[in-house]
Image (cartoon, rainbow, N blue to C red; front, side, top):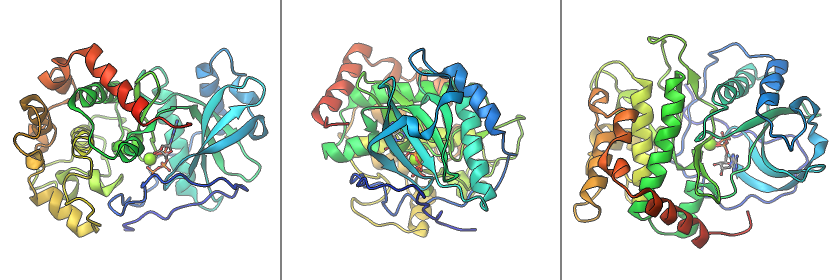
Length: 357
Ligand code: ATP
Ligand code: MG
């Protein structure tokens, strides 16, 4: 099994510079994705997309790559490059995720189709990134037209800010991310790669879950689910060692662990299971996750009792003891927070770190 998924660069002729997102930190290792689902057809992706397109946009089947003007690179991941684009006729702004799918690489194509399939299923969710269409490219790459989140990802916001997020803002982030997970889990969709880089925010202070590259629709309640996909640093202990940490791998509980760790990272200002600045390898991460005391990573006095309690409920090592998404939505840290104050605190963060986006 490959430990690190090869980075794939698009074939397109692009001259834009990448922003310094810090997203290439060594701890963000990803495992190779095994083919799981048969690819859905392009035409089904198109027809699903047309239902979600706003009135201002043409039906998705009319989208062509040349209809869009590239403005800048928004981010760069293992799956491809994401651009901010403007639709030339309507001037509407979008994010265009271009995935370099080598025709010979069937598993990568399947991965993209699976991402489209999940985005289409979650199209009505307020806290999941909105999908508009698959846009064909002349190079054969696959381009996904997505809602543009003008505040970017939470990991970029954290780096730009250079210091931890305040608790009220974290309560707003946790609440919205939990609502997104609740919507996904109610449709039997597991994300499997929740982390700050996959939580996006817009100027209105809305937080949405993005990047379903390794997501999965569980078709039956006991559907076998490969635990070794996603970003190693955010994997729960039972994904490494199911026997010692609660028995069978429960992908819903694993999403909860990843969210708890993501919120904790935003609170600490750096990846919380390792010393700041550490360049971890796979073994160091596994030891920290399975044998470290993740829930104790919030020093006493450094946070409110509600926050510490919330993190403890998310980061229970035994998956069966971890709170569910529904329970966490009722946790005092989330349910007890003043909605108006916490959402204002989140918008203030955006204003502090705002640049041209
Ligand atoms: P990785 O494999 O590293 O998780 P990926 O190749 O699957 O990444 P995404 O996570 O979908 O790609 O996107 C990479 C980055 O691009 C995000 O972390 C974010 O900074 C930016 N990005 C993605 N989608 C959007 C969007 N809709 N609006 C604004 N920025 C976006
Ligand atoms: Mg990503």
